[in-house]
Image (cartoon, rainbow, N blue to C red; front, side, top):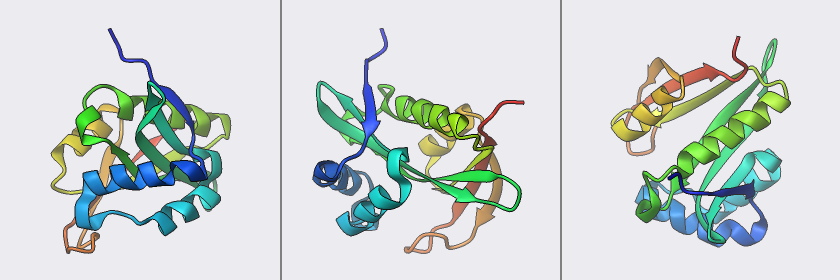
Length: 155
């Protein structure tokens, strides 16, 4: 039986819980509340939270970028409470995000993931993301990232 989640747009009152999940997930590399407030203004209804039993257990931030010939989206950040992982919350977030992007006619979604984060790489590859290139010293601690992308609208 699959766990039921509610996906909704993030709100300013959610920021404390989002930051707590961020810190639990990324430690010293965590984004701060000011940056999340910026994303809330900048990315609008593509800053999503996932709830179970009325408690936020994860978030996903995606922003649309105007490209040369088509709209593209960037998956900026995603995290699920470590105690709630591997139960479908990230999948529910990504499914909802992809539906929202399709409705807007976005053609492609890009992201960068830490090169050593095997579970995240496997998750994105399961969703059809392909590795594009290695981004040397992408993270503040000097770690490399892997740029990945996938079409939003299936051809």
